[in-house]
Every structure is written in C-alpha cells, then in structure tokens.
Length: 193
Image (cartoon, rainbow, N blue to C red; front, side, top):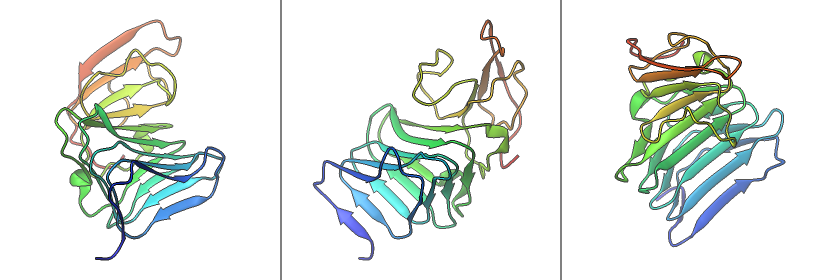
C-alpha cells in the first residue's frame, strides 16, 4: 500500500513549536498512537491532502496561519478520548475535502473534534456541523467550551448569538468585556461563509 504506516508507534510528531513552514501531508499516514503536526509560527500552515489516521490516539494540527484539508483530505481517529481531533488555525480553517461534512471521521465512542480559528465566520466548513463558541483561544481555559459535541471555537469575541456562520448546533458567546454569557440555537445549515 502507498503511504506511511507506523503501527505500534506510540506517537508521531511532525514539526516543532517554533516551526513556521508549510507542512503538507500528501500521502496517507497511519499511526497507532497520537499524531501531532506543528507549524504554529508566523506564516505556518498545515495542509492535509490525504488520509491521516490514528487508531488509538488524539490527532492535533496547529498552524500559525491556516489548517487546510485538500480535496483528498480526511482525518480518521479511533480514540475514545473526549477531544479526539484538535485543529488549531491562527487564521482560517479551510475544508476543501470532497468528503465535505464527512472529512473528520471519529469512531471512538464519546469523542469529538474541536476546530479553533481566529474568526470562524471566515472559515470554509464545507458542511461540517458543530456547536460554536466565541471568545476563546487555544491553550487557555474557556468556561464557554461545552464538555461534549463537535465545536468550532473562534478567538473573536461576539456579543450576539447570531453572528458568524452557523451549522445547526448551539452558539455560545461572551461579551467583549467577558461579563456575560448567552446561548441560543442557530438555524443555518453550514457551508462556507
């Protein structure tokens, strides 16, 4: 088979905390354990253009600018960890996968994905559906983050529950002063905004 298969590997890390290059996964990558892809420096991008699979571990990709799923991009996670897939874009999340809303495939019971970006109203979701949370940054505690359910997390604060693109999940926001929290349902069906 084509691609890289690293069965029995406890974890796999590509990149570093200071990387600012574009990391592109162009061939299938399969690991038993966790997969971490790091390019969080200025100008750093992560492009997943093929299948990225972890049988039992968390998959995490962090970019200073964009996290992108190309036309053949697919993320498969079999872990039962609550946060099975964590994608962190300093700017935009772009789902260009032909699989659309099925591009993040979770098989572990009770698991979810989290997608962080600067402002999810600028992201391309391509029919991925989930809750929305405003005013939270990756790596900092956020009381607004729900304990379950696929969730888009925007660093941009909002004082309304109807801003941004919506995917039929719940929208939670805080005022720009951090003093109040509101929740509500949204009715849009997703796609890019």
